[in-house]
Length: 318
Image (tube, rainbow, N blue to C red; front, top):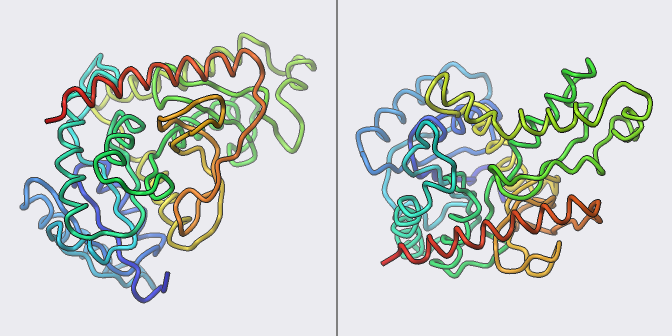
């Protein structure tokens, strides 16, 4: 993708979408941004506000405007954050029917535009809605990505780093499965400078209870934030801009994204959080790990829950 022509379309100008845009602009990942929202005034207002920010950023020239779905035709990347927000006490899967109908409408409009690029989805429940979008559009599975467990993995790295007084960026810790209550912390693959987490446990620097407590904290983090301030958006916004940057720059970087498994990890026919290589073609490769036995069991249970939620979503469509 040529730097001079990189174009990103954002569908959904709520707090998640705006956080993504602000992070993306600061990183200079694209030159042209188009904002689409069911409430046109929201897109127009945000375009003006963010354009003011561009005027101050050094070496970050870009154009930002409100638009419609016809703008998708020549876009390199579409980021979808639209959908109703998660309510207090509600799981991500509780939102499935409402947001599946919203996603179907968006998918049909994008398909009609003639769009040929990559789509990145952050609307919850992310993996179910990625499955809906891919089914409705018929796009190649590698060209449709959900944010998956990218944020969950970042949260786990932070918790481990805080516990050991080590920078989170130096921690390799991974969450697979649903971006939600059935997620799996793959401790068997976690390490710091090639020293396994199991070694830290053996040395008494961590305990098995510490690992379970950190998993529970990670899993409940969104609920904690929602209880305190009604929504989460900064963390996922930065995660989305990181994935978008990898796509637009053809980085072939690794992320824990939602990818459609067709036999990998003994799962078939659903999007689910797995390690993958991300580049210009979207998902370039799913990296298949040999998980610990209990992790694999939990991962397959997570996939079953996503399959069941997808059936609910598809039943809700017109």
